[in-house]
Every structure is written in structure tokens, then in C-alpha cells.
Image (cartoon, rainbow, N blue to C red):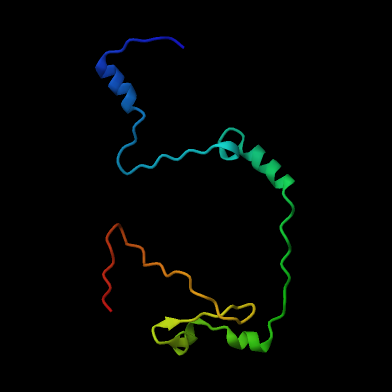
Length: 114
């Protein structure tokens, strides 16, 4: 480490090398995601973790198959303005937690014409 005296213009030039342009996002990874030994560390983490549980294949009963709906049955399942989906595994009703709006195209918001 050494002490340096810089002209104001040179200081600003060096300082601004660290400033991102508008629209850019700084992304930094720390710990096991740091780039230095990422593959080695992730491999070791995978060794230490227990194996993922195997999924059981359960035959679908006729009741469950009849309770699940496809896209063609969408109109028949509408109740008012809300559609209540069913679980393909147990045929129980699934609760809608949140409905997200459609994403804008090319930064321009979509106009709903309905």
C-alpha cells in the first residue's frame, strides 16, 4: 500500500471506472457461489447433502382422472369470474394465492382490449 497524490481529473477518471452505466445491475457472488472454486465447493455440498427422495408413481384412479381438467374443459369450469383449478394428484381444489399481470412486451405495457 502506498500513498499517491492524483490530479482531480485523474482521481475522477479512476473513480468513475467503478460506476455502472444506467440500466446495468451489479451482481456479486460470495461464499460457495464465488467464482474461484465454485465447481469444487458445489461438488462437496452435493456429497454432504442427503440424496433427493425418490418419487413414488401412483396409478391414477378414474375419479382423480375425471376430476382433473384440461384446457378444453376450461370454459365448463368457470364459476363467475373465477376458475378453481384442481390438483392432478389428489383431485382436491387448489387455492389461488396470487394472479400476476401479463408482462409488458419490449417495455411497452399491454393494453387490455376485452
